[in-house]
Image (cartoon, rainbow, N blue to C red):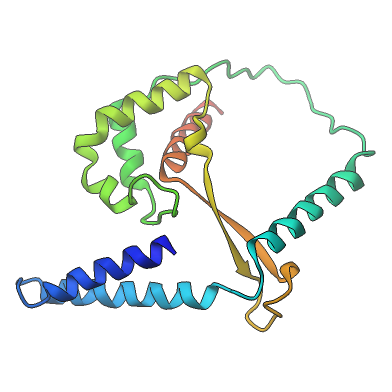
Length: 192
């Protein structure tokens, strides 16, 4: 609902200033894009199944999987001489490159929109540099990074919208999580 309200607010502001600027074509594209997103959000949502029903269904599903796999043998692992004892300090250039490589997507739990982060990256670079390096070197991921906005998505459009089993949960992680994981992935690729 927050995304819906925010998009409506932006659309209203753009409409009110539509003829006051020379960027009418750009504004027209933005308005059409926002309207398209709003239509998708409306078509994906469902009032036929409650959040509580979905939570109960997925809690039971996870519990059943844990019970059915509890008696299986632990996976064996081969010993190796490869040891990654800690992550390396990332540079300002690494962080800047990772910010530029982020997809233009965001979660409802994001503290900042991805496009805004990219536009303001020169001002935020030192902060991100310190924050991400502190997390990497301490080996701790901040709780705020791990927060996800979970959105139920109907598996197929022709399925019954009142049955919780017809949905799959989509976890939209924050842009800060994506940024940290991109830096971790780069270090792992360089290591191996």
